[in-house]
Length: 280
Image (cartoon, rainbow, N blue to C red; front, side, top):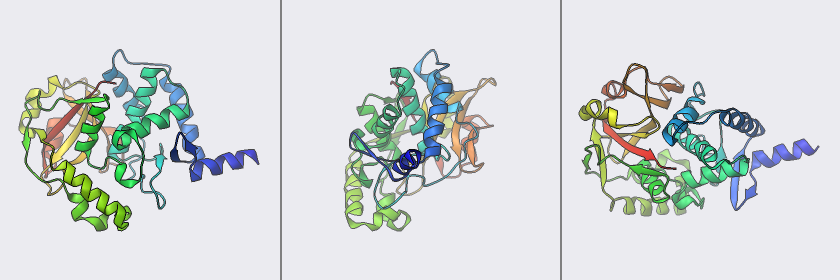
């Protein structure tokens, strides 16, 4: 009886420090197993730690829209299926635990909320960092990452970021007028920010300046969008920089077979990358 109550608690969500959490008993068990495994090893620096944690997810199925659960925004914990963004977020949340020698599920969910939401505060659907350039900018303000794109030779990206506002029908939560108006306000603020990216024809010459564990976001020419994909930089034995990511094409978390610079040549709308270095 007690186990049934606990399971129901986890499935429906519960409150810890004002968090509304959605997590299945299976995912709670996966968390405990993963943390025990990760605690046995630690990288010599934060980049190595992030790369190690990222590789622990290899083979995890790619599943889109895992955060679109129920009628209201909750902190979704899902290790059974990841998209490209939730993969990066989970890796950072676990890496924070290792850096801070944390051991509790509550520590993990606090880290995940910090990473996923504007100013670390879950306050409805619009508080989620939907646009990855804002995700980078806001997590830089939190002291978790540093955007190094300009240092690598990045150039300005001149375009309005308003895809959600102009494609309302693609986002079920935007059927709610309050959510929709709030997202329009977010996009108005994004319009005030400067965006930079490293053009794809410059990546190979700069890849040795990018470290394993850096976060890579794929900038796009698609109207209204800033980024179409994200993952983690990983130097491989071939001496080249590859991408550790949740691949929608192959359906799992994997390391790109091609070096990043070559991998991007096959993506029609890609114009280059944005690079954020974790500084946890």
